[in-house]
Amino acid sequence: MPSRLSRRSLLAAAGVSAASAASKSEAPEPLASIAIGSKRVSRLIAGANPINGYSHATTRLSQLMEQYFTRERTTEFILHCERQGITTWQSSYSPKVRDALRAAREQGSKIQFICLTSAKQDQLFDEILAMKPIAIVHHGSVTDSNFHAGTPGVIHDYVKRVHDHGLLAGISTHNPDFLARIEDMGWENEFYMTCLYNLTRPPQEIAKLTGDKVLGELFLEGDPQRMTARVRQAGKPCLAFKLLGAGRVSGTPAGVERAFEFAFRNIKAGDGVIVGMFPILNDEVTEDAGLARKFGGRAG
Image (cartoon, rainbow, N blue to C red):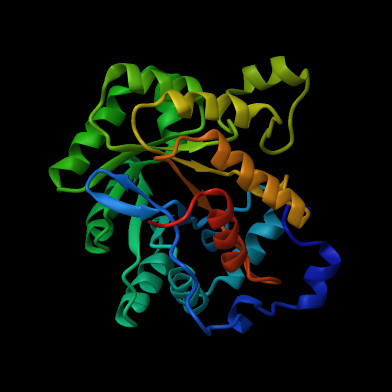
């Protein structure tokens, strides 16, 4: 099962959170930060796919993630990230995300929020604005669908709409060629979110690559090299995500470390990473923050 935990250890844990048992003694040193527009964010940003039940693996794992992350555990996750020096959280909108963020702020959290959405969720726009995000990012799969359909102008219009509300605008994509095309068009977005795996290839392209029908999503080993090459050419900050391949390259601590090292060595100094964490068995927040300090530079 693609995750940092084995089936046997998962069953043995029976839902016990290692994060809740983590030491809260002395605060660790701050994480290195980067600028996106007028804001500074930690180079490691917490993601939210596990919180929202998107494992990119199996339905059962997705269900387990969503059930584990109650509103209360999500609030504690936010606070724990902040204690470990992570200053920013990225997520799509959901009532649970909204309520957890509100509860964390009521407990004194200053974490910055980046929301991932698109015009397909226009009915939620006011709700998202009420959460006081520092930035709104056009969703990657929608971005890629717009390019495949020949309607990239929809993305540009969304960037302008976000700016009309005084917020930073980002564009997410899974396709390195689309990243290059947006750069060439000179749009006004302040930053990008860039998936290290191209998960939005059209079915006909996948058929040519594999000669068969793929069950689930296609993760190709060479994709991170292809995306990071484009990231290094981009003139704006990029936030690389899925560096662990949704668990496919992180079956051991050494695998996790290699993935972090690859990401930080192959993006620009002004870029960051977004990592989803599922601390059901071990304290992935503290572990990932440590790897970000090891490979992502020191604060200063």
